[in-house]
Structure formats: structure tokens, C-alpha cells
Length: 114
Length: 110
Image (tube, rainbow over all chains, first blue to last red; front, side):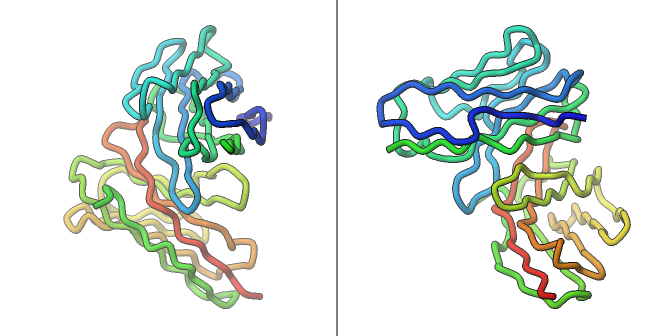
């Protein structure tokens, strides 16, 4: 079946601009996660959704970052006033049930802020 | 100091060799332990999952967790060129917020 999909695969933006990154989880998965992976590092947790609500957003680095999942399926990560330090691969994962350890990752969106 | 430490390598082995990977951690509350494989420009793929201490075997892969030493390992037997990838350890206190190591890059030479 279809896995987690993320769009766009690559995004280049100028410093100060606003960007939106989209994640389509595996159908039927109620839990959704966002991670950020910088070059040469492992993914870092950003936020976890159970259904429509953010159950844990403790990993969001500051208030420029915001994520939504209005209908409990697709999620959008929004970054305002982008900075060069935001450049990274943004990974989305989903799991069948809330807090399930088997997180299935998408291919990521590579964000470059110039 | 990072919560999860993993030697980035790189590690190069001949085909058929045993690959040995490990991570150490500082948070004694971690109780879920995972190994992921990540190919270039792809998302991580779950290989092994272990709850608490002990060993788990799945085909050519063996995962070990020693909570008393805060040390986890992954062994890959009869390694193949297709095993060439970055291997990430991950762990969690609960079962959703994963803390990852930096990853070890492995090359299996044909």
C-alpha cells in the first residue's frame, strides 16, 4: 500500500519568507509525527498529533514553527520568517495508533533557506 | 552532552562480515529501543524494536539492550552490499517521542 508521502520533496526559499510543508500519512493511521534532520545528525522530534490535536509540541524550536492537522489526516508544518538555520530535512511519520512505536517515515522535504 | 551518543563512523567491512553497531545513552527513563536504517535521501526504516532489556533476533539482525550499562547494540550477520546505509539508534521514555543518535554510516564492500 501507499506509504507516507510528503510534498514538496525540495523547497528553496529566501530568508524571511513563509513556507508550508505537507504530510499525507498512511491511510488509517491516527498518530502523526514531525521530525527535523540536520546534515550528519539524527532526526529531532518536533511535534506529535493524536487525531486532530497536538498531544506534544515540546520539540518545536520557537513560535515561528506551527503545525496543524485539521481533519485528523493530512498535516501541514508552517514556518514563518524563515532563517538560514531552518535549513534541514523535515520528516513526517505516522503510526497506526496513538503512541505506537512503529513509526513509518516519509521521504522528507529538504528545505533550503538562502 | 547529547542524550544519545552514536559513533558516526564511517564503518567499512567486506561482504559476509559481521557489522557491529552501538549507542550509549544517559536518560535512565528510556525503555523503548529501536534501530532504523536510512538510505541516502530516504526516510528512516524501522529494523528492530526492543522493549526494556534483552536480546531480539530477526533474520540476520540481532539487537541487544543493556539498561544497567545504558548501552544498546545491533549486529548484522553475513553482511551484504545492500546493507550499506546509515544506521540510526532511537529510544523513547514513552512510546511516541523518539530520541535518535547521529547515525553510523556503513559500507559493505563486495
